[in-house]
Image 1 (tube, helix red, strand yellow):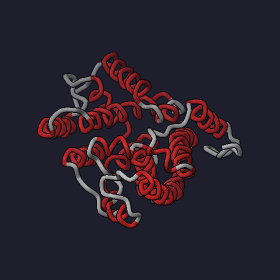
Image 2: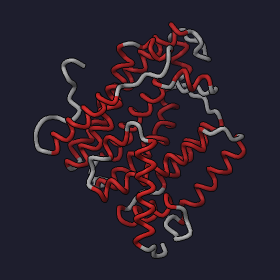
Image 3: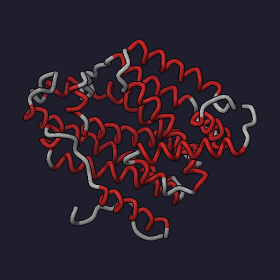
Length: 295
């Protein structure tokens, strides 16, 4: 990696943090709990992940999307060169500082290519492969920034937590994705709940969603075992991000039919409460993400 002037790096990281504040509706609550160096690095990871996701979710023809994803894959080999854009400059610096596993970005590209190809999922094991690529990959990158990548079992647990978060995303967006021709829920599960392949029967879809919520809860139970392996700042970050998604999952589980009426979300006040509870953890008291009795 060629040396990059400090002002250029400062601008690069600032751009990544701006992208994260603007686009990361849930993750930003946790990222802001990190120390500034780790916060900047994780913002760079998010910014590049967002770029890759936006290619896969964009309106360009599939051939153009695959070309653009291939270009990103090629750029990953030379991140940090002074001629690159701010996001890649920041990633190059974070790679050196934290030993980012760059193959994880390759996994994310692989997952987006599955979206472009319109990959169908027959079983939960098929879907888990996708979830590990698009979400577990971010967990593995985060572990490097947290300094916990060498903790025994941490990588697997980060993958598990990524699966939990991605399954929650899939359940939240099931109708929106369906309108775009993307069906992620396993066809074997749909058949078992008498739900048509296109998920057009709302009552059957609600039964299927309720079933998948129990699966996602199991992934959360495993993935959250990662928290004790992290330092307190990292615990607070992961606890806030996971806590927000966990509350979203439980809201869907309480009313599975809600996903047929529109996108389910939780208000900003609840997100702030989860982040605040994790700040308490930083001060040595309480349990990050503990559910309120009224929730």
